[in-house]
Amino acid sequence: MRYQQTEFLLSASDFSHFPPDTGAEVAFVGRSNAGKSSAINALTGRRALARISKTPGRTQQINFFRIDEARRLVDLPGYGYAKVARAVRARWERLIERYLQQRRSLRGLVVVVDCRRGLTALDEMLLDWCQAADLPAHVLLTKADKLARGAAGAVLARVRRQLEGRKDGQFSAQLFSATKKQGVEDLQARLAGWYLGDGQKKAPVI
Image 1 (tube, one colour):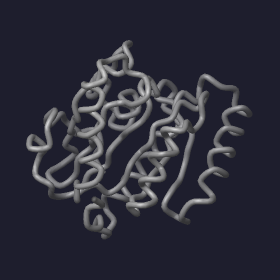
Image 2 (cartoon, rainbow, N blue to C red):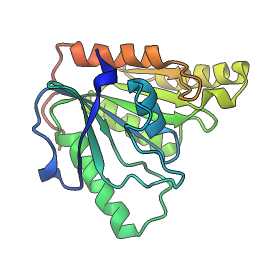
Image 3 (cartoon, one colour):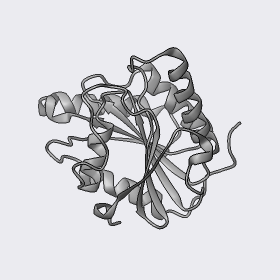
């Protein structure tokens, strides 16, 4: 997979503006300020591919990035923090929900979690949905450089125990640091397995 050739494709605030639902996509989602954009930039080796803002919740649209003609990365709006009007937040939530439910090209979800926080109730709800939809999910524990090695390892072990009760093989987790480039190759390998796999997403969950 040539992640370094990834380029911005389009931003969409409405389902009708999404690119054709063909090929394969992997989406990144997580709490605002968990390091989603930094993770995408580190994954692709492109410093400014996904815009990084000091203001959590700035991503207000679904951003699509093209790796090649058949594969895309998707950056979903962050949740749980954005200080925006309730109507605006409700529109984001409907857009994300429709994307997750109806996008047939979606192969897997990267759930970005600040390792200093661990899984939140919102993260758990998202994993519940993935389990019901039979969609693979990979928990990316970002900002691992902010913790001592032992503490970061303890967080990873705890999250993996939390995932044990879910469907075998559907969920995984790793430590990650965009700043130190820790875990980039592991993340690339996880995504490559989804992109190159033969599995197709099941019929949309309504």
